[in-house]
Amino acid sequence: MKPQPATGGLVYSTDAGRMCPACRKPVAQCACQSQAAAPPGDGIVRIGRETKGRGGKVVTIVRGLPLDAAALAEWGRRLKAACGSGGTVKDGAIEVQGEHRERIADVLQKAGWTVRR
Image (cartoon, helix red, strand yellow):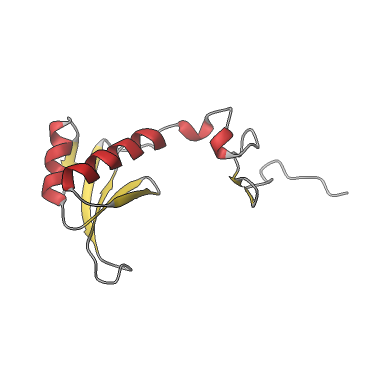
């Protein structure tokens, strides 16, 4: 029988999806909250515009919000409502469909964030 490496183990299961590396439970049912820690950042929220890989459609990207997943989803909902547009939250960034850099910057500055375009 092979010994299991200390750093290895189950990462993804077709039954439950992503697995927590610390407690070995599905991320949605994680008891240790190791995934809930906010990502490190420099405190500056960066707003950009991308068209690459989207068939020429413009998407406004908001990166650098040092929030956990639930708070980031709430901010995504607020920004989409403020712009009257759709969007999503992916990989720690908020994507809003369309060119809305100025409007998003105003909303974030009023909330007290330092914003860079």
